[in-house]
Structures are given as structure tokens and as C-alpha cells.
Image: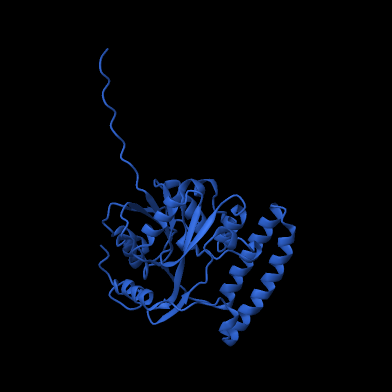
Length: 304
């Protein structure tokens, strides 16, 4: 019997796939990508998904020569949920990570979340704390997050403190639990509410992401609150959690009132309360911003 030719061995995929959708992010995208390239954990692929940008974002994305960076563009504006589902479909890693085009990852982000998922096979999705900032001179602070599933989901009608751009989880979980494009703007909270009873969540108390907060005005905040309330009400009704529907409605009215007072009169105590960022984390954030050659995180050219 003649020997069969040896089959060519297929190259193994990366351990981590990172999905990063972007839309008109020319001022911040380069820094976001550089913060991934500078990770201590290097076994990754970065999937950059253009959502129909009309600025120079796509050219910036394509300017990176790292073969681990993949750019996807169809010229259409389909929304974040569609792009995240698309990234999940294209991902080849064991784990799927999230990020946005205006955020920055601390160098240990991939390593810390990868190691956590390896050590805790029962956990489907792990987020991390984040430093919220406006620019290098306006650092708002970090969240008071809960680390364990029971605490994270204790009040599901009130939402889940798991910063969306910091998510990392098993790719199979994302394949089985897709984002719903009907709830763009609250897609993360709707997904968590839909899945929390059959899934296990965790959140690292260490800040691993820098979350840029811009353009906070009442009309934008109200629109997001309304989308979130609608998402939670529909999901609660579908799951037969009727008690939650009343709680969601009352909480929506209370938070809208608090937002109005906060944004119209500057009473900061009525919005999310931040904990002070440590000096070390604040300095690391400023260092990441300086990677652009500017203190504001604005791109100044030379992307490769």
C-alpha cells in the first residue's frame, strides 16, 4: 500500500482575538491600537472593524504593518452590535476581548484577563475596572466594582458594573450569546441581563483599561437611559421577570431626574461616584497618551 502524503499542518490560531469596532475615530484610534501592540501578552490578533467612517479612521487602521492586525470594512454604517457579532464570527482565538477606538489598554490587560480565564474555567466573561478620563489633566477616577458573580448580579434591574470595553471571555460564549442590534447604546447591559442566570461573570478590581468620557450632555445621556430601560423592560418581560419591569421603570425615572440635576446644575454627587485613581495608574494613563506625541491623546501622524 502506497504511503499517503502527509497533510500540511494548519497554522494554529492566536490565543486571544480582540474585536475593536470604530466609527470616525481618527483622533484616538492610533493610540488605541498602539496600546494593544505594546501588550506584555503577545499571542493575539486584533480585528479592526470600520463602521462606515467618513474621516481618516480607515486609512489609519490600514497603516499598521503588524500582521496580527486585520482590517475589515464594507463602507456601511451598521452599528456596534452588528460589528461586534461580525468580529466574533471572524475571531480565531480561544478568548474574545472587547475594546473601543477611543480607549487605551494598560500593558498587562491581556495577560491579566487571559490568566484569570485560564485559572477559572467556570467563568464565561470577565471585565476589569477602568480609569475614566477626559484628557491627561482631567482624570475622573475608577469604579467601585464587585469582583464575584453573586455580587455583580445582585440587583439585575439596576444594571451590571462591568465596563463594556474591558470585557474578555470565552469565544464560544460570545458565539452562543450574540448582541442584539435593536439595543445599540445599551447592547452590553441587555446581553448581561439576558444571560446572567445561565452564565458566570467576574470583574477584576485592578484597572486595566482607560475609558475616555466625552460629550456628556443631557440629550445623549437621556437617549442612552431610554434605550437601556427599553432593553431591560423587553428582556425582563421575555424572561417572565415581571417584578423587574416595575423596578426598571422607577429606576429610569429616578436616574433621569438625577442626570438632569447633575448636568444642568453641576451637582456631581447625583452621578456615578468615582474612586480616586492611584498615582501610578494616573501616570501610566498619561504615558499612554504621550505615545501620540500629545497630551490629549490626539493622533499626530506616523502610525506604523
